[in-house]
Image (cartoon, rainbow, N blue to C red):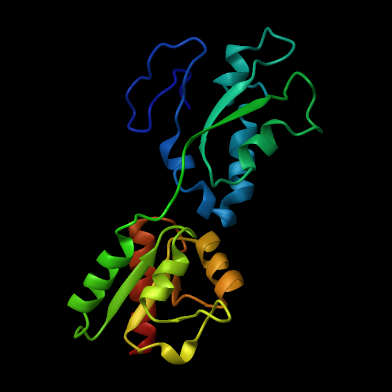
Length: 211
């Protein structure tokens, strides 16, 4: 890892003091990478200790007894992996980093979603197979209601209403867990990696297994 902060596309970051560092590929799908938590834990620890392989934050402030707080810009829905690791009470004081979280964006359902979703479903009603890919727990109820699967009295999915040709895939385990725990619905595919390729691989694998 280079000692100079870089953006996720490899371009040098602005020379800010304190530095501003983004790690796009490592944080973009944090909410979905539950199976990668141990790897993230080890990666994040790199910023709390010193050593030849561990530059960045630890080296920028290696002469300070207490590291300055880290401003962490987040969404309203997030996991606590980064703050929990950096503020681990078991870390020596010189390695612990206070994390100040600042919510800068939220997640919601577009007002037009229900109508637009209904239009798409109507346009594809004669297709032999169609997929709905879910990227967030937010809006799952609206999606299930649009598919006619949600029993309003119980708040759960009525599997008898499935049409056998409309399938649901999730971007990762967090969204899958929400569908299972909140609505009693097991999606047809849960991507092994939270990416377009991961979704495509999961759908291809599912489709192949049915033939």
